[in-house]
Length: 164
Image 1: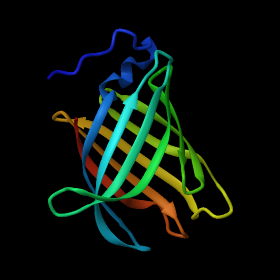
Image 2 (image 1 turned 60 degrees about the vertical axis):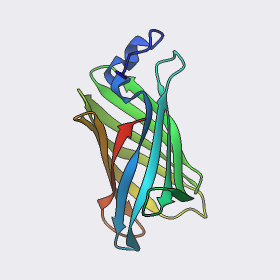
Image 3 (image 1 turned 180 degrees about the vertical axis):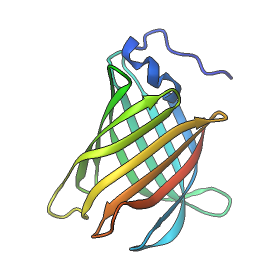
Image 4 (image 1 turned 90 degrees about the vertical axis):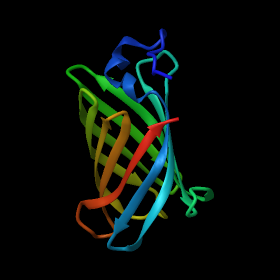
């Protein structure tokens, strides 16, 4: 089944239209403060006719056959394209922090960097991030570098997802 651009898609969203829909797959995580791990993921990009995408990412522990065992992380927010292929992203996490990201859209590649990370008194210390998303041979590949818990910016998560 081929992907079709919705007729009611706001014109400002055309550079992000390739993201629309549900993506599912597997990923990997690593960081000096934790054990290496694998995870399953579902990302949904939707729209309501306004000039932003609604984004929800859910990750979960999977067993060897890929069956979901338990939830890991959730994040949600809004992807707001701006003139000249600029992008603003606002994300919130139930663990007590929120982020503002700025970046650029280059065809089927998006690169983002944090501008602001705000957190509650009980949230872990996350101070910066860098994300890269790309459509490669029909798959959504992404990587997330993080600076947290006194560690410098470095690779943390990466995954490959297919359109569901």
